[in-house]
Length: 81
Image 1 (tube, rainbow, N blue to C red):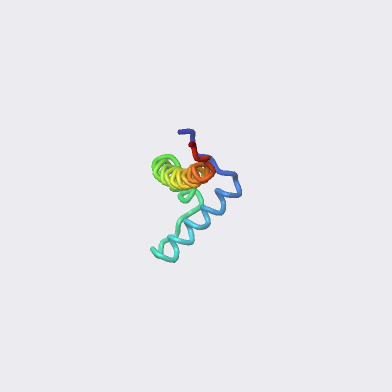
Image 2 (image 1 turned 90 degrees about the vertical axis):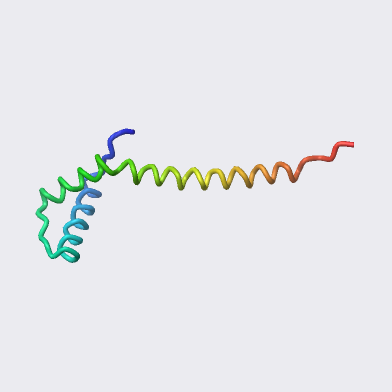
């Protein structure tokens, strides 16, 4: 799997969300550097789990759609006499 990278804007939003979570849920201040470090940890060490869940969901949708196409193809089959 390739390294998960985010734009600077995406990273800033996620860092702010981490800081807000720590403040609201844990009553703990998370400095910018620490939040960026934590985000890098999640992306590097846990990102594959989230990525694989997304792939699993996409695969399920694809299989469902292929099944519908397969049904449509059978529906237009001509009877052989």
